[in-house]
Length: 110
Image (cartoon, rainbow, N blue to C red; front, top):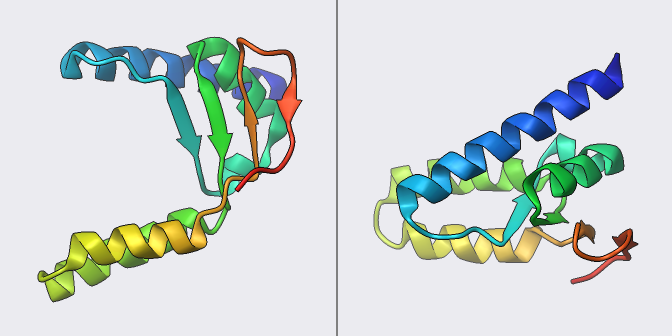
């Protein structure tokens, strides 16, 4: 049952990224997966295969930091975007990556 859910998620991601590329008129070459789902190696691998894109998994806490940064930016207005980038870079660390064009998984990277 879990396999079916993960395959469905990966297929949905592929469809969504295809739509985004169509609307933006630009190709997306890599996906940065953050939050709790980034912990699941099977989901990351399926996403790379379904999308044909490199999948970089960041810290599960990155989504919390991003949420905090957006709220902070809304409250402060001035300098919010720069602060968001600084916080995200400071706390978001790439854990591992999957690239469907290469075989398998690469180890931790920073």
